[in-house]
Length: 227
Image (cartoon, rainbow, N blue to C red; front, side, top):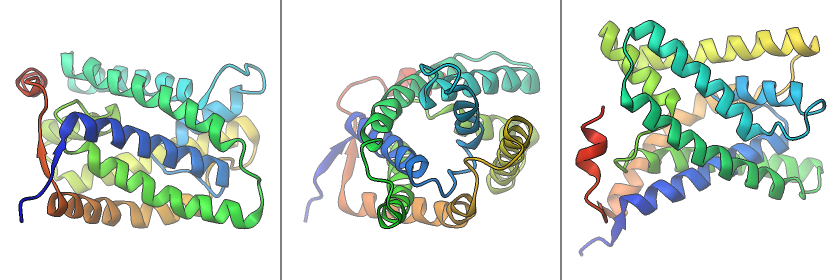
């Protein structure tokens, strides 16, 4: 049986939406966000009381802008790809802020929080798996890992693990420095770290089993030419 076509541009939009909704539900549940977004979330928590307009999405813009600076210093190169990836951050951050407004209406009951957290794990994994299919540049976190892996000729798993651990340590240090305790990081962060990779792989296999991915617009050569 011929598989239905899933256009990669649509997959990109759905992936961003699922990832944004998953991270907003994780923040609402308050069991601990993923290691990758933890520094941005801690920064948001630290500044939002003083600057109510400083949203989770804006914190992501700030952290990922710093990631660009660090990446340029480490690779000693400036690539258009870095800034194209930041465009993905802009889209993701805007959708994340909308999702944060929506999840703020949920009642903070224990059962609702647990359900939101479990759902967030699956939504984030489903979203990330979809973002591997389009030609649009991935987020800067993924680009950072790919660039360092290529420069140091290290295995993807090693670089990704080191990056995730460093993100966690930065978030822990920020939280202790700013609050004197851990905020935004918890048992949920650990559970996510163990399950996320496996779930992303399973969702990816499921997508390719169910759909044929195809481009709707002839833009792939431009984006892939700026890797």
